[in-house]
Length: 253
Image 1 (cartoon, one colour):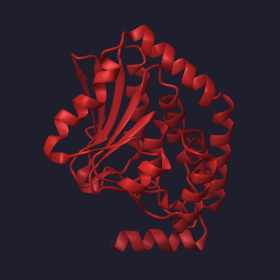
Image 2 (cartoon, helix red, strand yellow; image 1 turned 120 degrees about the horizontal axis):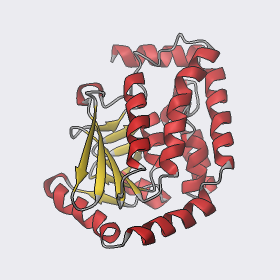
Image 3 (tube, helix red, strand yellow; image 1 turned 180 degrees about the vertical axis):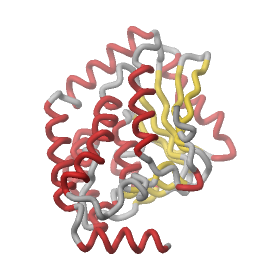
Image 4 (tube, rainbow, N blue to C red; image 1 turned 45 degrees about the vertical axis):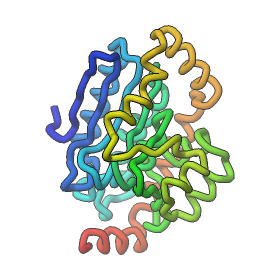
């Protein structure tokens, strides 16, 4: 088990996955991705009413992939092999049998936005920012989260977010429909309880029914192929100079 991914099961009926690398902005390493795959698979066998994903600390939910693993010198084939397992995590998370909630405990960038998009609902701490910034790094989303974004919000807004590749405030993200609400650090426990209560008050059969309806409408089996295509396209862009220079700048910052 990875020491950087924590699992908690609450007697109220929900589970929580916490990315636990605040010193690395909760960036995802290969080991963490493998552990996420295992946790989500195992959680499907539990009688949960909701699954929550959050990050440790107060600064960053997730900065995307760990550059020690997702470094810029990978070949296109190596990049595809590196990126694909997280695509599978996102797809499985999107089709999880009960509601999933991302609690964004800070700034969210790149692959972190892709992970949050795979959840049904997203709430962020006040003052946080979010950004599908991959377009400014010489690549495109690499885990299939861009393809999934078109299923979560209005397609033109999704296109705008991806092609502009800029950072949005929580208020802007709510207007786009990507965020469902804002949580506050000083009342975090109460806010989380308020968010979860509508789910926890339902019986499990209700929640499964509502989720199955949503999946049938918005997360079709064909989405997996669209996500695969996105991973391939990102892999083909991986070794370009713009991406190498962007990674080098980030590592020096």
